[in-house]
Picture 1 (cartoon, rainbow, N blue to C red):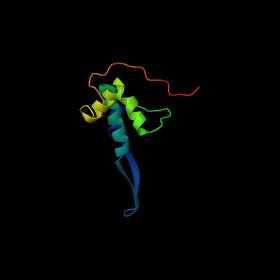
Picture 2: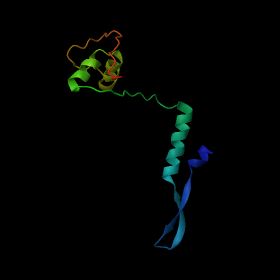
Picture 3: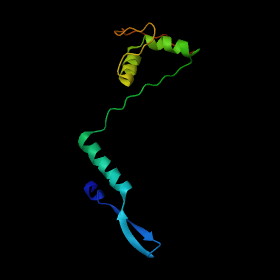
Picture 4: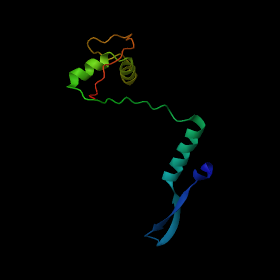
Amino acid sequence: MWIDGLEATKKEYDKISETWSTVPDWKERRENANTIVAYMEGRPIERQMVLGGSFDGFGKMIAKMQGSPEALRVLRSMTGELPALDGVQETAEETELPNTREN
């Protein structure tokens, strides 16, 4: 079924000759090709980092991120190197951040 979709066509009205003609359906072909590749190769891993909570300011948020190994890993993967933040050590240890939520 997906392979047949690689040859998908659609009818289009030609105003000049006033007839219907068959043209390639590129959107459908592209979607079928992407589906075949995703089925054969698998989807890539999509990681994201979401920052939430109430921070007093940008400086306080950066200070909390400096102690987070996960934040360092994400920043390193985005830039290809360790970001130049004051006080950041390349081998950060796992530390618990204080609870920023107010009960």
